[in-house]
Image (cartoon, rainbow, N blue to C red; front, top):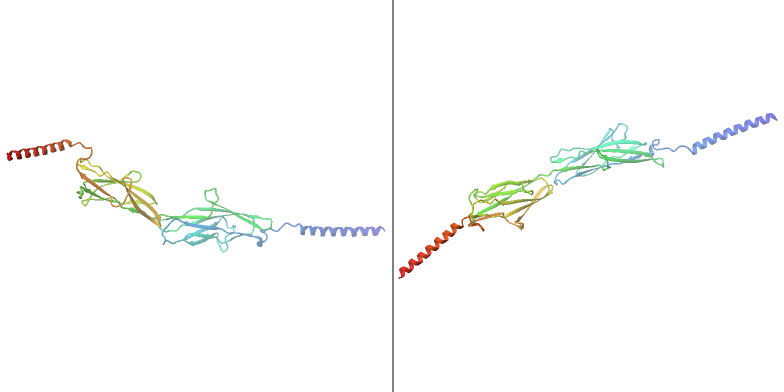
Length: 322
């Protein structure tokens, strides 16, 4: 009897041990830790970046290739598909976007890159030399895969931004020549007889010139480097000859500069504050000026002498008749 009990106890212990082992195996199978993407390549994630090349207004016939470079912070950082080194290059012709080949991530982590534009060599262009810092955060998600998020900032700035490179074209300046005509009593005056002034939009004297033999007034060309509306002023310097009535007109030369690839200037005029079309003309006349009594005595004397002569002629004529 005692032997039977001992045998039963041994059998029960064996059964319990077997059940315990089965339970452990089942619990390990049911409650096993999830398999994350860093352990299974199929559950990885990819990042797609896009850079934009932007160009300011430029000549229509201009064309150039633009290249951006994406560089990894270290050798362990994943690179775009097909890239064998630690720098990826993308190129396009003209303005538009450059799509970076997908970057595949197989495990969580923080990955860092930088992107910049390779400067071109075309004349009159300033190439954007910004460097962008790209920090990629790869994390596990609830489905056993990976989430990818990228934070992009321009070097030296705190605000997040897009990968945009703005290249600026410096247009060729446009020059405007201003000319005028001079008359004296309706005729062409002698060379250098009168002076004329050209002022800029701030009232600064740009140039003072004299008329030529043909009564032509020519100022040096004025150069404009930026689009905008500019107002120049032209007027005659009033001389000291009291027998001349000087033309006091003021002409506004309104220069509207626009950019159509390069700069283009359109000119309109005002005379004494009113719209004006035609040539700029300064017309002087001889004779006493209004309100000028400097030589009034001379004029009175001449008039008196003329009157005396007329009276004498009249008296003499009467005597002859008698």
